[in-house]
Length: 181
Image (cartoon, rainbow, N blue to C red; front, side, top):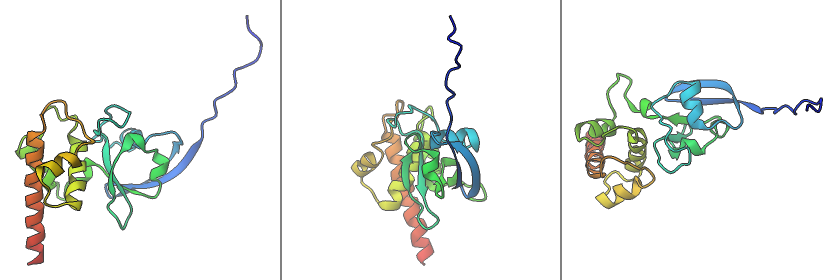
């Protein structure tokens, strides 16, 4: 039996955002409830940012969120709304490579030292490692494990991940020393 009245429409709130992702500026209208991870993947095509658990437990969606003056810190993009990133700079795993396509030291170390297996957690691990090494360029193994504690890997046992972060830290420190000369 129909009551003759239509169901109320679900009005969707939208907002205009402008965000710089991996050095390119994007201006879009998004639903206010859109998560940053979905905006990155579905709207601008940054599929290196992985959707893992959608509950902020696994860390595979980790990106750097900052400003023009501050490279930012790692955040789980499934716990940030796209509208919260309005005006921000976002760096994804794709944005770490150099302009010539050369891998960032952390990306290279993960590849060379087998810090990945299935690769699902790798983007978030790499971004978290970059953030860690920026704050602590010479971490101990325990500090590396603590710095990556928000990222889960179901395959590796973390040994090679820790080795890769340690090696990347050594390479980054050597680069800084070379620049200072």
